Length: 410
Image (cartoon, rainbow, N blue to C red; front, side):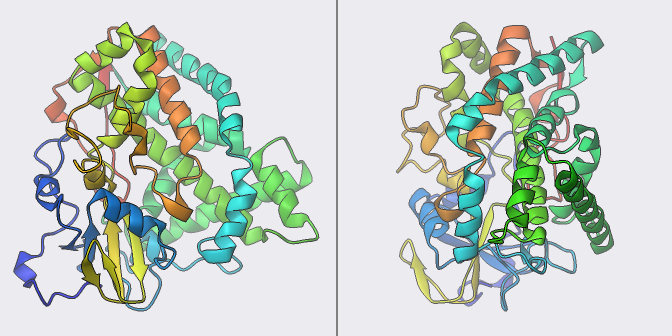
């Protein structure tokens, strides 16, 4: 935790910050843009350091001396649950894929399934899923909640097809994922139950794949587990499957809703893509860069004294890196508040992280968002928000940010 010696309890703001509107950044972001490390108080009551500038955020995420595990002595708790939240939970017995050599081993094995070439080859499958979902939306008729009718089912279908899990379980996946990512929303009892159910489901699925392997990621991981060299334990296969299911649909699902809201709230952005489909990729990158509903941020813990942006950080400090402020740093991005799909360096945002834990599925997420936008402007050119943008309701109480509903019409 961060020492409070230079700030009184009353002056340390609560975190996450409140926002003036559902699609607007917190006012504190502008104030903190030149503050390398600021003290904030988590819902648990613990004080952490919030890292803000682009270079500072990138440096912390890339520095191997920092760990993402908050189950270390002295680390801050993020959530109000007894276990302190997902980052404070120790890994299951037999799981060594989070840090150091174990993480490098795991990443080498998994990265073969998430190459740019493989994800681009998957684009036609994603396109088929997207067109089917738009067909369903058109058949149902406007208005629809784009989160429920498209944002959730598309990533779930994609990640289930990739992993080899039945897509029929999408509602259960969504529930288990959200509970596991709680900040203030769920109790410890609900978290424990969700973890048991999720682990039990995946354990059974691994046995199904062992008996009848298919052309999917979970079958491949199971075969690696069964190999004589033991490169993955059974517990690591289950943990990997859980991580892929959560990360593969939770964040992308939320991003589809946020992208739709961001473009339709200032509809000239959507119309520009309709007029010039060549702007799809740049528009997706600007949506990712300017997202104001990212959630809490990315935690890191340091056990030795260090400096971040010239600011002393003592050993035993928990930091939260804030990609939201980093992505609006005018030392990196000219006119950072401007939405510019032609921005040359837009893809250098830190929404997917940096360093050894850079999101392994970022290419897949980008392809899904690109396909979504391409499909919407092609098939729903008159798409618009049903309600005023200020009535949108941000998700609260969980680590990952998003919008509860995005009702659209056409």
